[in-house]
Length: 116
Image (cartoon, rainbow, N blue to C red; front, side, top):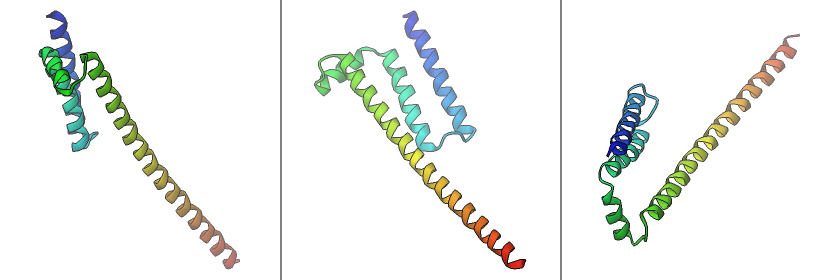
């Protein structure tokens, strides 16, 4: 019972952090919903641990631990995909920026040569 209380407090603090990050505009609405669902889901699981057994049985997964592992792997792959997509977008932005700077510098050099 003490462990449930400690875990619940920690999860509430994590959720409060997510709310703070949304207010500070460090998270968009989609990210807020994702993190809120994660922390609140873990909080409900902490408060009502038998529900996991029922969900596991409903999904046809033998043990609760297996279900947690499957869910964790799914969440990690989803997060890795999101990070990959962001990295690709940043790489495209960086390429465009460098290309524009190079074109601008080349045209400035060309203009300086013509003035002489």
